[in-house]
Length: 75
Image 1 (cartoon, rainbow, N blue to C red):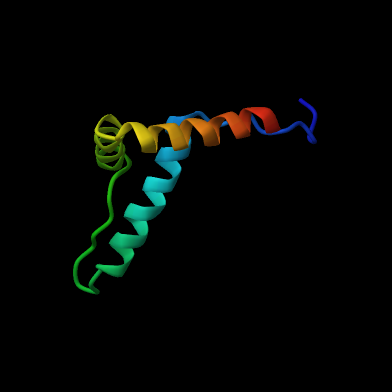
Image 2: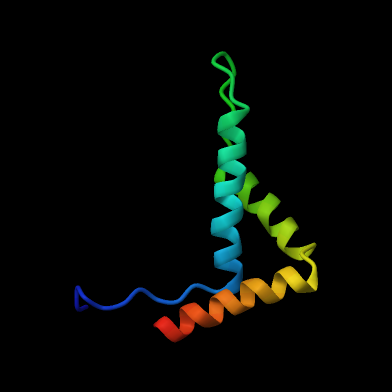
């Protein structure tokens, strides 16, 4: 594989997952206390984000699909 090959485009769900993951982890870091280890497993994180994706309204879904189309054009 060529080293300068562009990265594959992200789907609308992948973009949503990336943004939600950052949101959840940033929120988790701000609520963390020293005596409680409040790490979130990838499995539970994926379940939370998947549920949020299923509940996403049409306007927000269209925004993520638009971002995915932009990324596809970049590729």
